[in-house]
Amino acid sequence: MPTSPLSRLLDTSKVLANRARLRILATLEGNELCVGQVAAIFDIARSTASEHLSALRRVGLVAERRDGKFVYYSLTVDEHARKFSDVVLAELSTDAAVRKDRDLTARILALPHDLVCEQGRAALLAPISPAAPAADPDSPSCSASHPNTDPQEAP
Image: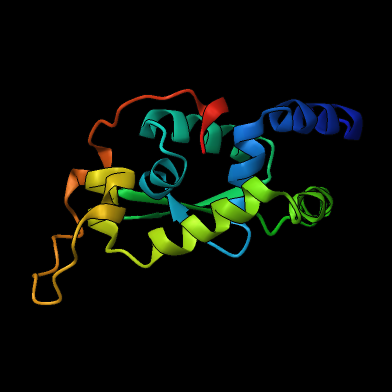
């Protein structure tokens, strides 16, 4: 049975009634990120990042793309969901925390993917050697455990 517009709006509003999810949604604007990158940006456990991304995907705000062992998330192209997210993102565009998140996202995206997935936010402190060989992209490092922190208090 199709979901009514009222039910969809209520479900979407419930999912977005969470500071971390709003910030993750804003971070995905113009970016495609894997769970490990989202976890590093917000300094949260990969499992927590995955739960937030799954909730956003469930209500249609986020799309996922599988590439080998990694799942990448981006804003959806669904017209109805984009209308809703565009309003939310416009409101968030001037928020200081969201601006900091976007700056941190740019720094994370500039690092090697495997380094971010292996070390989380600590990868920002790791020296990058230009002569270092590239890691195996099929490495399961992105699924390694990461210390859990409260997603509501993510930087």
